[in-house]
Image 1: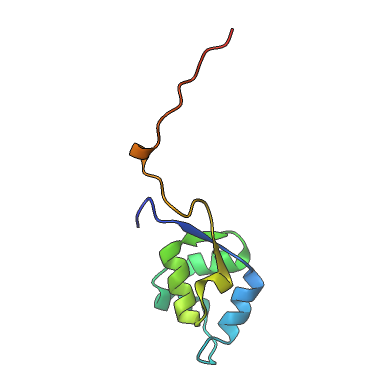
Image 2: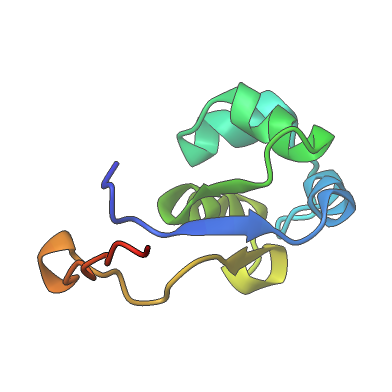
Length: 99
């Protein structure tokens, strides 16, 4: 896991649930099955379905979508900056004291 890896927000819990009922192969997949094949925890998938968690790292979003058989932008939307900014590229702005 990279600290600069972007996160993706789930578009719809209901859509994820429907896609799990009929994946790209026509088969259904369980929370545990999806988690195992996507390489994440079943807690992550369960939390996405329940709404406890809305965002996952890009690699997790892509893995979930690969297992389900859909393009990532069908189920997730990128959050934050599209181009990561390294800390060395950010110049701190001086703060002036006010009277």
